[in-house]
View 1 (cartoon, rainbow, N blue to C red):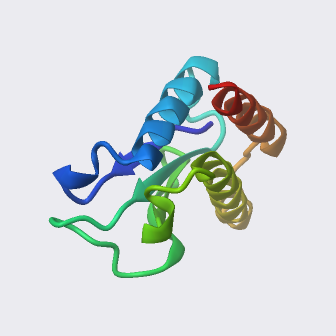
View 2 (cartoon, rainbow, N blue to C red):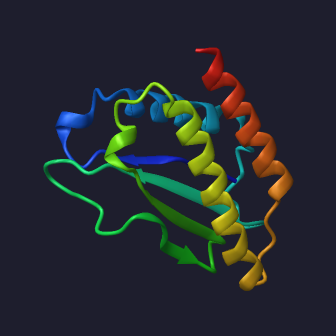
Length: 136
């Protein structure tokens, strides 16, 4: 279903508020998704949030496909995080919106390739992540 990743681009961003929100989102995704999400029965998406740091920087804006595996029925969606989001108080809203956009992006890839993907399950998981993030 959804397995979230983070690439901070450098150690100086490890303590950025956004990274904390992303780590909580990763934990929530792992806790609430189907344990066999990547069994190959249906598509799954791995949104990876990439922050520009001192070691690495994304060379694009927005979202793009990082890797697609027809065999494993998985797609990595790379999200280039704007630097304005690193320390903002509304990082929860940003993360939830970026997750929705990445799932919509992946859903189109799956549809184009004839791979089953449950938008409903994904939306349910994103609602759970959003709700839990806003509690903390």
